[in-house]
Image (cartoon, rainbow, N blue to C red; front, side):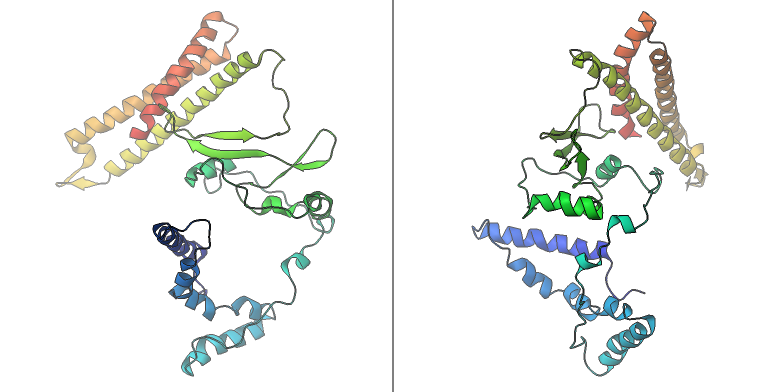
Length: 326
């Protein structure tokens, strides 16, 4: 059992105190100053007291398992019996964090596995699942005293560790055509909910001087986008149709085991009608997706090409709009 609170629960309580302090400041007519009520609320909380009792836990064990077990026993078992809730001493680290960082050339390269879409997901999917939403035109909250250090030291010597600070990849390096490293100015602003597309995530992205390569031939930008949009719409259809099928499977499994008034739900007339409607819509979405897939595979045929251009828009609207009802 760990002697300190879990990070998720601790951060949850901290998020509760912050808006309270901000609300009190706004009510008092204060703005652009320090939220003094926030640290006071934290210091008077159970969380602060619990963190104080476990402040030396990790540092003791860095001195060895024997020392760690002995001293944590003294602090967490002996001292409370002597009437001391918190140890009067604090074990400080003598080495700063940055001094423990080793050059990238001395460390083995880590090849991270691709997301399995079960327990791990790609970056955009993770942002969507976390329900992250940021307002536009947010001020930059991190400033570099010397921007050149990020390239000549951080990237050149240590492989750019700041690229791993945030799981969402807020900080990253990109090579320009001349070969010199530079921060990528691409910024994800917010996720959007569009009419008829509530089951599929999309976002607003700002490219502030970002390095880019031309896709398609010059002068054919709109036509290139239209061709890409057709494939994207088809992907939305297939993904949403798969979601309908998954929801139907869960519903059938549940109803095959759940009893109401002494009978299984699958034997109830009203529930069977509901399940039949879900099954018909799921099969219809799958059939429409497969028909459009054939049209996309036969774009050389003019009839199939026109069908693909029109049916992808209609199919995406219909399937994505109906999927949340499953």
